Image (cartoon, rainbow, N blue to C red; front, top):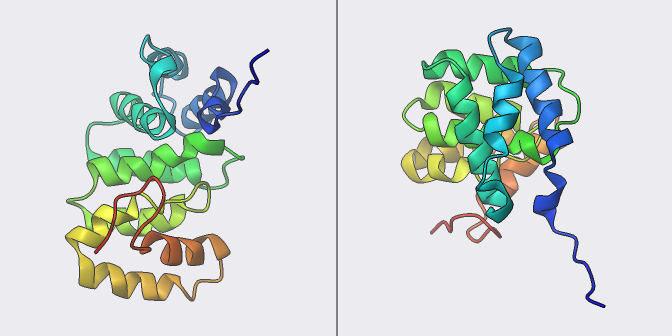
Length: 170
C-alpha cells in the first residue's frame, strides 16, 4: 500500500479559497466571490504546485479587482486589515504587489509590510530588492526594528541570498 504524502499545496482547498473570496466580497461589494472561486478551480488547478497555485490565485484576483493598480491594492489592503486567518491563499496579496506593482514602489513596498502580517511576503519583496536596492535595504533596516515579529521576519528572510522557493539574490 502506497503511503500518502501531505503536500503544502493541498492546504489550498475550495473551502479555504472560499474564505478568501468571502473576505474580498466583504470589503468590495463589486467582487464576485462565486466567479472568483470558479476561476481559481479551473482545469489547470490540480496540476499546479504551491507557488504556481499562489500565482494562479493572484491572476484570478487581478481579473476580479479594479483595473487601476492603486484601486486594486486598496481593496487588498482593506481585505488584509483585520482579516481572519486566510491561510496560504493570503500569499497572493503580496504576490499581487510583486506582479502588478513593481513600478509603483511608493504604494507596493508599504503594502508588503502589511501583507506579511497575514502570510509572509519574503518571496514578493525580492524583485523590489533587485529593482530598488538602496531603497529596499534602508526600508528593510527599519523593518528589522519593527514591533511586529512578522515584519522583522520579512526583513531577515526577504534578503537572504538563498531562500528556498525564492529567487536568489547576489
